[in-house]
Length: 402
Image 1 (cartoon, rainbow, N blue to C red):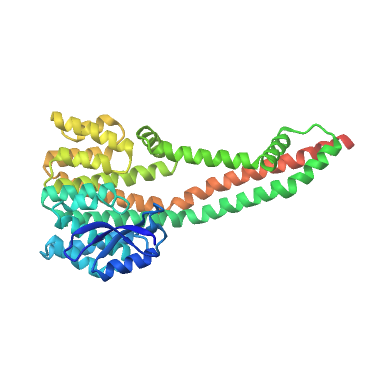
Image 2: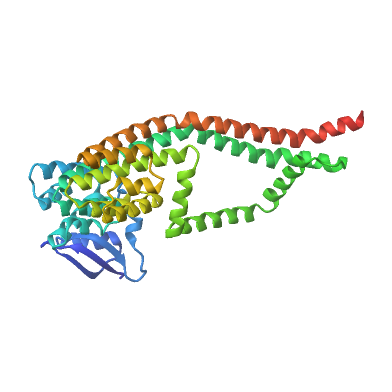
C-alpha cells in the first residue's frame, strides 16, 4: 500500500508531521480527520509528488485577501484579540483554501511567532509589501490602521487593473483580428501571387521581395520561429527576475509612451500612501522609507527612495534628496517640502496620494482613446505595405505591356 507523508494540526492545535499508509490521497485525508487531525499537506512518499496540486480546492484570489483584511480590521477595532479574530475568520471563510491558510497562521502565532512572520510563510498569498507593512504596523502599535490602509491600497490596485483590462479589450480584439487576417493572407493568398510572379519572371519591387521573404520564413521555418519566440520569452522572464534585469525593465516601463506616465502616477500614489501610513503609525522615517523602497512596486523608484533615505540620514530632510533625483514630479517635491516645513507631512502625503488616484483613474479611462489612434495608424501602414507588395508588380506589368 502507498505511503504518504503528511503535515496536520492535531487536537491540541500543534502541527505534526508523520507518515501513514493509504490507497489514495483522499483515503489518507479521511484517516487523519478520523483521528481529529486537520490536514495541511499530504504527499506521496514513493512518488515524491505534491498531490495538493491536483486537488479541487479553490484558488485564493486577491478578493479573498481583501475580504480577510477588511474583516480583520473590523474585529481588531472592536478590541478582539488577534488570535480570536483569526479563529473567527477561519470559521467564516467561504474559500476552503483561505480557511486552511488562516488556521495555519493561527497555529504559527500561537507557537510564539509574530503575525508578519506567520504571513511570511505564505508568500504565494501575501505579497512582500503586505507583509512588510504589517510588520511596520506591529512595530508602531497601529496594526488596525495599517490593515485598513492596506485594504484600501489593494482595492485601488484591483480596480485600476480591472479598468485597464476593460480599456484594453477593444484594442486587443483589433490586434488579434489583424493578426489572424495577416496570417490567413500569408498562408492562402500570398502563395498564389508568388506563383504568378515566378511564371512572369519580372523584377520584383522591394515590398514584394520582403513579403515573399516573410512567407518563406513562416511557411518553411515556422517551428524555428516558434522556438526562438518561446526561448526569447523564457529568457526574458528569467532576466527580469535578476536585480539588474528588474531595474532595467522597470526603467523601460517608465519611459514607455502612454503607459510610462500611467505607471509613474500609480507609483507616486503608492509611494505617498504607503509612506503616510507607516509614518503616521509611529514608525521612524528611515525605517518607513526602507520598507517603502522595497515594496513600492518599481525598482527604479525604489533605488531613488533609498538614496533619499541617505539624505534624510544626513539631515537634509526628504524633499531635498528627492529633488536631486530628478525623477520625482515637481508637485510631489513641493508638497513634501511644504509638509516638512509646516509639520504636516502626513496630511500632504495623503493629499498627493489622493491627487494621483484621480489622475490614474482619468488616465485609465482615457487609455482606450489614446491607444486606438496608434492602432489605426499601424493598421494603415500594414494595409499600405500589403497593397504595395501585391499591386506594384502588377502595375509594372501593365506599364511594360503598354
